[in-house]
Image 1 (cartoon, helix red, strand yellow):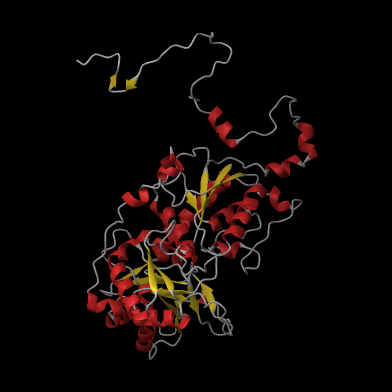
Image 2: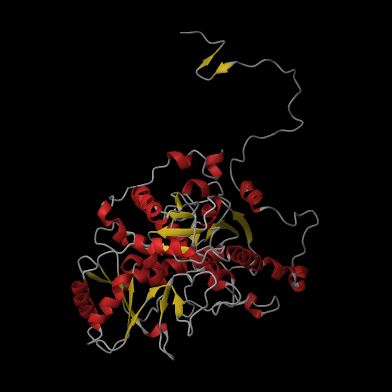
Length: 489
């Protein structure tokens, strides 16, 4: 029964780590994992205990990296090889359990700010980029030298963007280079002026310029990828980028380019479908997908208030990493909303193997908040912190007496007219006068009970008072394959 609702303790020991990556040759460890920079980070802080967080595909190098760092710094290293949620998030809880004073995160990272102040250094691993091939690909995709374009990349290729921009700037006049939005060190002051921070990246825009004016050229991905639609980093860029601007990608190894307009259209169409599913839903499951990212408690409270205002029932579920087997135990839930980092919130949504759809918090906001801008005008916010008060994208709920709650709304999936929120209709005395409630009618029932009553099989019937009382007798003894009263033949 335990494995039906959460992962059993033995699963952490029996689970395969996935396809292991190739081991890095020992002479290349210093270059690939930037051990000189990491050792300087540890020495500057004077840490005696340091946590090293590796994703599954890099665990083969973990022991060698830890031994090399212990030798050069004299500090004790602890390897965090299994996180409770996503490996892209900083595992602050695991580091605290090891008593670590700092954490080094290796591999792809969402760069979300941690919930607790802890010195963190990121090593994204530098991937080789064929600059000449990328220059030719950029020129083929952007023939107009005056068109504004932003250079983007996957985290492992970010080191090559400045060199690529240097080769392009003699011809292209309006070129903007993005950089990873690493969290600022603990206690440091924000630079002035603060560059725009979106999609886990920083954009040094000139005064008066807007990011929506720029097209995008993305360096990353691989021609050997089985399904590029499953890349959450590229997906959040396509969803959030201005629909009217061109967006192309380039493989850093071969220079092969692709126009991402069709893929962006598919992602936006699926987002509109998920918003409609959320509007039709009566029961919403809020999945706690992170405990280490800042403001996750405030975001959970915001989503609960949002569903309550929209007349929906919500349940908070803490199940670790969501899997189809876990979520199938809650058939009365119409949609799930995963409260996680931007990459973690998109990963299960793109897999498509769940019985009920999994939404991002932004999609639930668009479905439940009548003041939210219509499709095409509202931005797709990839981080739940952008929905909270204090963010420039925050849209407060309208007051109960607002006419926005009474706007007629028709489901694009079922074609039915959606009723107003239950709390809104309960204050409408005219409606109560026309449809008086019977005295014996149940005022409010659990969604699980309502779902059970609609099923054809509802379990064993108790038949209380209808079964005669008999004396207890001894039953069969033994195990199922060999009871004691069975013969040996």
